[in-house]
Amino acid sequence: MNIPNFTSKLLESAVDEFAKLPGIGKKTALRLVLHILNQDKEDVTHFGETIIKLRNEIKHCKSCNTISDTDICNICSNPSRNSSVICVVENARDVMSVENTHQFNGIYHVLGGIISPMDGIGPSDLKIDSLFEKIKNEEVKEIILALSTTMEGDTTNFYLYKKFKNYTVKITTLARGVSIGDELEYTDEITLGRSLVNRTLFESSISG
Image 1 (tube, rainbow, N blue to C red):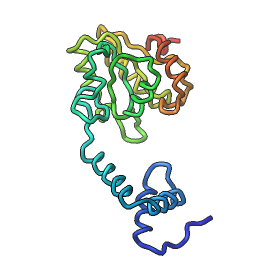
Image 2: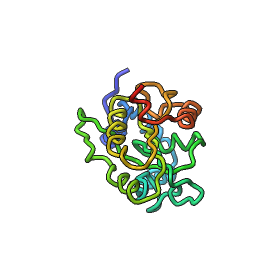
Image 3: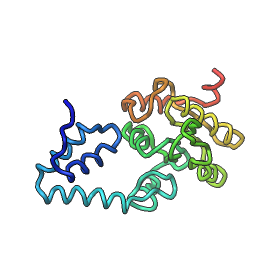
Image 4: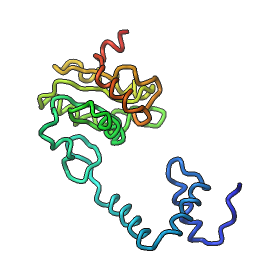
């Protein structure tokens, strides 16, 4: 079924905006906009204000770079977390994925991406220097490389390993329960939890 000609420029503009979201085509966008039009004005106002407030007030933790309501997120500021073990992930979604396993009590470091020459993303585009400072200046005992098992993820893992291997810090990676090519976001909690608990030395993963 083709998208009909719009009878309203306002409707068409709203559909165009929704269609800019990842994974949302014009048909889905139209369905969402029509759903919103059927809601009470108060509910729609609250929806819009929530999105605007999110964009204007959201912060990134000054310690780990994850999305936060405050300058230091509730994970980094939690005294019961083991700050000597840092799990390195690509983005805030991966923090949520690992947290959902309930198998990790350390802290995180969000790189903000992975090395991808095809997309023009190099090491200088990632939050690597702040991780380097933590390793040099804080009592970090272990770095867990928990990036996606894609070629770009593996490239980033290897870059970080080469950069940090001469420091007195254990560098580990997820056990290969996470299939090759998988992203953490799409890995079920039990598999990810086991891969985290059964993590191995990164050096073993590249020599084997």
